[in-house]
Image (cartoon, rainbow, N blue to C red):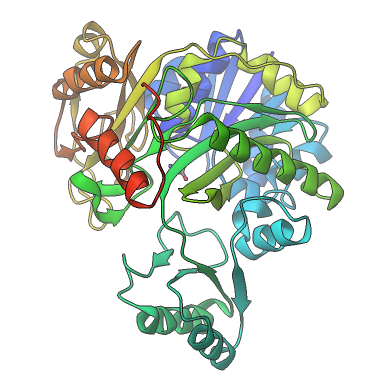
Length: 438
Ligand code: GLY
């Protein structure tokens, strides 16, 4: 079967590998030639992922049977609608359904209308004085968000990027002037986790939970990035997420898929719930309409079921099972020095792939071209997989020195200390629980 993968990051390298492992004949279109995907692909086309007509042209030339869309930006452009119009099924939500990620006001209103559990109090404002007087009445700390896609960079939280609600009002005013609208939510205290599921619009099949490290620097300091690494546990839970909260979060995702169906915007593909585990249970922070990056690299190497079968089940509306190995995983991303604010670009790095393999780790390429030149975003991920988190972290750490160049990474991703810090934080927010082993 000829499968077209759209996108060329670390997430897509992991998707491509899982597809080839399932027996797919892989074709790729992305804006740069990812060295990992180049080896897996039968043909490789260069185009912006958002240039839908160009991507379609490649698909028709290659006689593609099914497409798999990696990133969110082509979903926002309606790439799935365009493929379906040409009779090519595509894994990913339509433009209308992808609004769960691309339009935060849509997502929040849907949750409200269908009373989806785990929702937050929110308001959307287009007038500055209305926003200011609501904030004065509300009085509690808030989160200010742009409505559309911002690559995770536009969200600001009181107590973190914003000192107080006074600064929140100023930032919200800036967004109204720029975008015409702003989303303001109550702030929730807790610890974040990632819950990804496959769905054919009716059935919802869970993947192992993962935890992302979005801050650039160790000890959760510095600017927010796409994610500097992530880990998952052999139990498929996380140390600070008890089974009952896992079940509640799964209920939220199931209720979301059901609501999308009732809303006339059926959702098919991968649904990513970014949850905050608060003292009262899991709360949705964001939805994403695709795999997480790096979280795809936690779950896909563990997938025992054929990803191609899952892809066909999603587009045909008869999704079956998805089984994952019971292993722990640690992903560490190496990013160019200065990322995300002023990353080094255009310089080469050296990768000793054999030594990485000998260390027992996997390697996924991202924002780096075939000549191993850095393109400015997260460049290479190393992944340790083992029975325990300690062992998986040790494997990833052993692989890192075999990638050399103007790069940095977070040593603390997946370490026992950083995981214990999250367990402590959960307790400080008033939750008593016995941590799950990992
Ligand atoms: N790791 C966060 C994301 O994929 O959006």
